[in-house]
Amino acid sequence: MIMKKLVLGAVASLCMLGAHAEGVDDYIGTWQLARTTVPNMVVIKKDGTDLVAVRYVRNTLTGKLVETRFPATYADGAVNVPALEAKLETALVAGAPTLTVMGEPFQKVSSATGTSKLGS
Image (cartoon, rainbow, N blue to C red; front, side):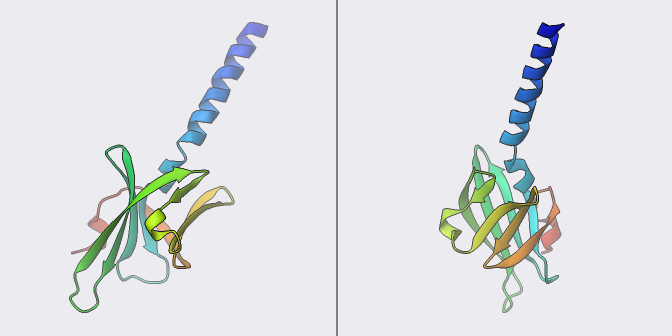
């Protein structure tokens, strides 16, 4: 009986560690600027074995979407984008992942990483 409890406890601990290690999945998806309906989005996704942050902004003169890709890493519960360090910040707030770009809050609108929500 004691051995069974030890094994179950060990399995539960490993499951909790696995869930914590998968925290990057909480950030993967499409994030939209909260204050506008104009396409201004960040997509965080895995690109092969790498993590990338892709910024989509509609060019007001041409009406076309501009895509900018940045390599990213995940550590300590946050996505780090060295090229955008002063502009893009992620954190866990009350256990929920948050994302701001240049101080503007973005909200997660999808766990999908496609550009279908961006329009053409």
